[in-house]
Length: 336
Ligand SMILES: [Zn+2]
Image (cartoon, rainbow, N blue to C red; front, side, top):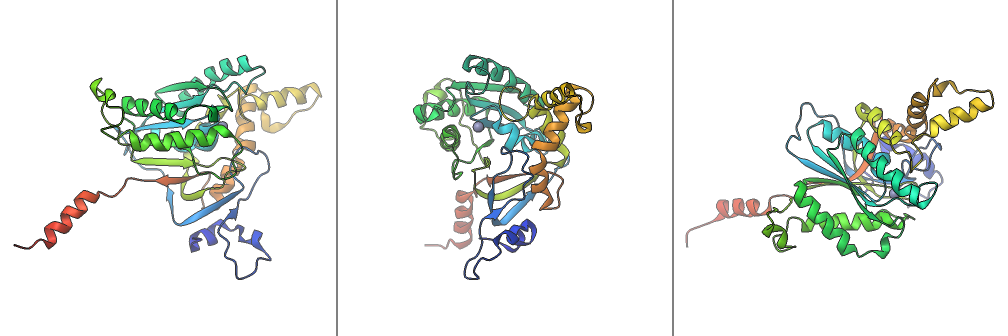
């Protein structure tokens, strides 16, 4: 499981000092800035066929559509914002789909709903998405909803939008305390498979929709509890500032938003200043997010010789089995 690449590049084998030689380490502790609990998970297991996805010149994804699905308004911006921005820049049309109403993140429940409704529009714009959708299920209560309903709504949207690629929280993330994440991950996974089926919700076809062939999935981990199998590291160095701006747009939820300007104002009241935060609120918010909240993504990238990186369990297009069998038949067929 632990290939030479992961062992030599990941480096944290030193954390396994004292481990008896009869044990082979398979999970790797990440280096951490300890600036934020909402960045990269504590442990990763890297596959031995790990791929590093770099920038691709031109618009190789022109004509393709991605859906970035999240339980909460800060999930995609924090964990996958760099890669979503990268793929959109490389030609994808992107859509952001939020499944909860984010009521648990605001000064009151009602305020949380309104603020996050506004924020998701700003985050979608910063990512380069064409449109944001919200399903408005109650925050942290999603395990009380019928999974089949969430999945059916996703199937409908995947077909309407002609989705080829999805981003979602890994439905097999270990140790996640948040009940919404795994519910959404499981709904997305089922929807990806069923969206292409001719017998699933046939009334959609009567209404003019076509099956959606979702062929690529980028599953991202959640921190700090998440621990998932990583087979793809994405170089987001060119998109880190866009990722920062996406997180700054998230004012109602998560650790970013206007935290930098609030810290700057707090210090000013004490007659102090932090040079990092500059002289205005906009600079303070950007610098705070980049310096404190993105540092773990820098440390993740550093392990692979990159500026900043995000990690995924990527599931790509399946082999064309029918064509392969046909080729076998053509090569081996004999007269009766
Ligand atoms: Zn979340």
